[in-house]
Image 1 (cartoon, protein in one colour):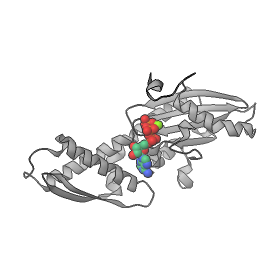
Image 2 (cartoon, rainbow, N blue to C red; image 1 turned 30 degrees about the horizontal axis):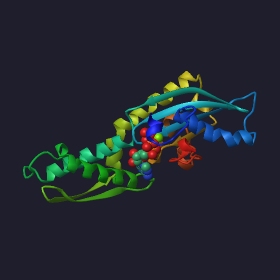
Image 3 (cartoon, rainbow, N blue to C red; image 1 turned 60 degrees about the vertical axis):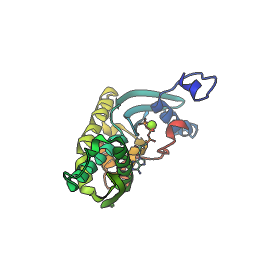
Image 4 (tube, protein in one colour; image 1 turned 180 degrees about the horizontal axis):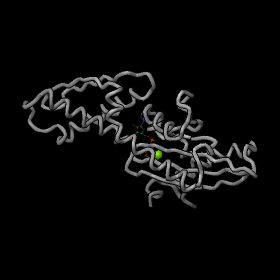
Amino acid sequence: VGCEIAGIKGVQRLMHENTATALAYGIFKDIRKEFTKDKPTNVMFIDFGCTSYSVSICAFEPGKLTVKSSHFDQELGGRDFDLLIATWLAGEFEAKYKGKLSGKPAERPKTMNKLIAAAEKAKKTLSPAGVKEARINLECLMDDLDFGTTLKADKYEEMCAPLLARLEGPVKRALEEASLQASDLVSVEIVGGSTRIGCVKRTLAGILGLDASATNNGLSSTMNADEAVSR
Ligand SMILES: Nc1ncnc2c1ncn2[C@@H]1O[C@H](COP(=O)(O)OP(=O)(O)OP(=O)(O)O)[C@@H](O)[C@H]1O
Ligand SMILES: [Mg+2]
């Protein structure tokens, strides 16, 4: 039904997003004969998007792809980071205009929408390593009042800690189900917009025991983060 709504006709088969990513990764490597028969090439794929987080492990052999395990947190995504920042902003705004507001900013949909949009922008500003702060300016946020503040990188990471803590579970479970150690992985491929977040990359590298000082914290982004699934 979804395909009909999207105007795609003659659908033969549906494929899981992680499988699609794995196929896109393997197809040219297979043609270039990079896989061997006696020792499967184990690759972990991590997709961290807007609404969900998934980890899967695939084994590549010549002409063959096996999905060994797949684990998710379907309630964890980039929008949770936005909401976290937006809620913090709402609190700061309320504290600044204590008692002068006509209601709670968090209960005003229009105000929250503005805050969430500003939060996503600030989140993206804070993604690259070395950025120390993000400036946030909102005109007429509520009751015709303007609001401006700065979110420091340290504060942001401290706020994100509960979300970052949830990255480990699916990685551990995926390794367990595939009966593999992190060291058995030839590569860890990251896709999805939220893998650009600096502290997400660092946390993942920590969980997998990768060299945090390497480019991209030892994670591999040979795939196009936004298009890998649809290639
Ligand atoms: N530079 C960046 N820094 C931080 N987050 C980013 C950056 N660029 C994009 N994002 C976030 O990535 C998310 C979108 O990623 P993506 O396009 O992979 O999601 P999706 O595939 O639509 O969602 P899902 O697969 O979770 O249903 C958004 O939450 C967006 O804010
Ligand atoms: Mg996605």
